[in-house]
Image (tube, rainbow, N blue to C red; front, side, top):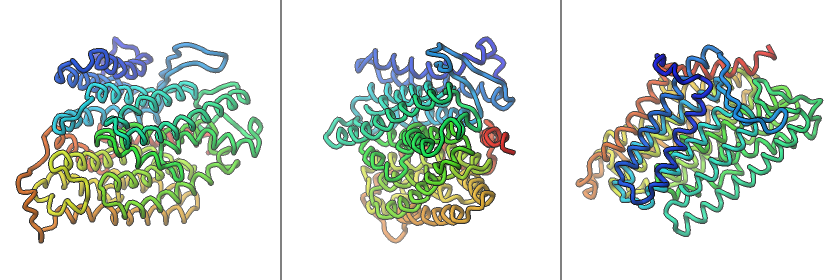
Length: 506
């Protein structure tokens, strides 16, 4: 990709502009208020999403070349500043979030109009603010900057969770805030401790803490104080219950929570803490990485069995996310270059596959008003493209070859083999079979030929504004499995991140 035409904007200012473009869009939408014509509101959203993609993609060549890109906005005290920078790990997450914001925005327009949703101005404004904070997380140069954007993400997501303003939504919103704000404040306390013993908060590949700064058992305590914020948002058991509760929100919000921003921010936080603050050596020696890995194993297996029991489609997908996000946590905690690259690429793979599944759930609901799997018998015969996309994403989630999920999971398995952890390998293989067990019945029910439901005869495919984004996401989940470096070199960036973390140890 050639971005020479953007040479007038210095590299170091592009991360800031990528953060601000959606923040400005959120402000415009909110200030113009409910009286804004919906076409203008949606135009602002789409223009901002395209600009964000351009700004983020323009940084890929610099990240691949290892060029230092850093902008310090202001310094707070010695060793602590509010700064943005570009590195391979952050670029992987930034590319995913920016790409999917465009697809989700188009989908949201079809969903919100088709379902006649209220509070659309607040919805689009909060959605844009979420993407602004997620982008800030990607480019945060240090713990303090990361924390600021992390809290903005928490607060800006709340209006989306309580979108319907009913008792169930408000209760779910309170639970979400309780989990995320409390863990966030503990995270901040840990940041203060880390700064007091090290004099810095700058992310460093391989970490900047050592056993002399944080001797056992203090290292383990601070490890979980920091990583707790990440595993709460990532839905690692037993800190996961806010995530299924948040499914009361509209389906595009579920897609945002599960694929674009929130849970991925939790996984990314875990990556930064384990590998860029503690580093492999201290994370291993203090016992934190091993304990967290077994929490991830437990989550992967238990959440899969719970998903099998859910008949509400969004609830089943929610518990699928709980398990699939723990793949990323496990890959991080295996502590090898392969597993780290696999964990990062799983952010990509899971994002495209899971957003497809949630978009299908929303498209079916808007078109037929069906939420329960038992009510979807034969629906695939009336909505073949929609349910065909669901089938593709389901196979991808299970990790079949030629899907993005296979690339990420294979690398995590290679890392587990390299680390001599056969039980982790067995867990990953078992979870693939479990994924088939809870997703493929949905496909089989929807395409069942023996039953012709006359209720579905009046229905056809979903609105094109919903159908096209979900088909695009499904197709990309296949293309990224066949060609992992397609266009954006996301697999190369994942490998670069893994190698940079473990290079000092080799």
